[in-house]
Image (tube, rainbow, N blue to C red; front, side, top):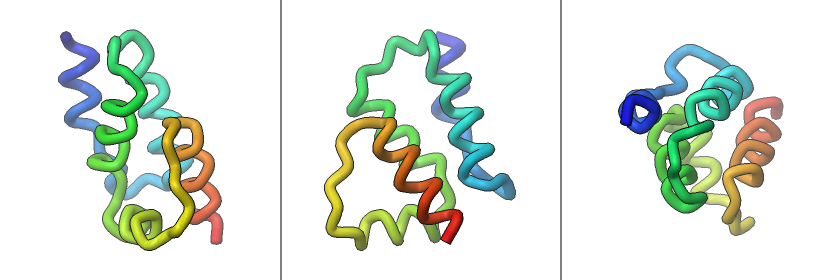
Length: 77
């Protein structure tokens, strides 16, 4: 239950997306969340700029790993 609460509070804030991904990965372990819920929590925690760019993208992302990879690539550009 603590992991779920921590995951829901997690936000990117002033960190890079890579730092946020690393923290999100650490917190999600042991949460018991299924993939779809993890993606939703991840989207909620990331900053608006990257989130907006992802939503405008035509590429469909389904797995949490795809979200990590795509957000890191966008942040580097």
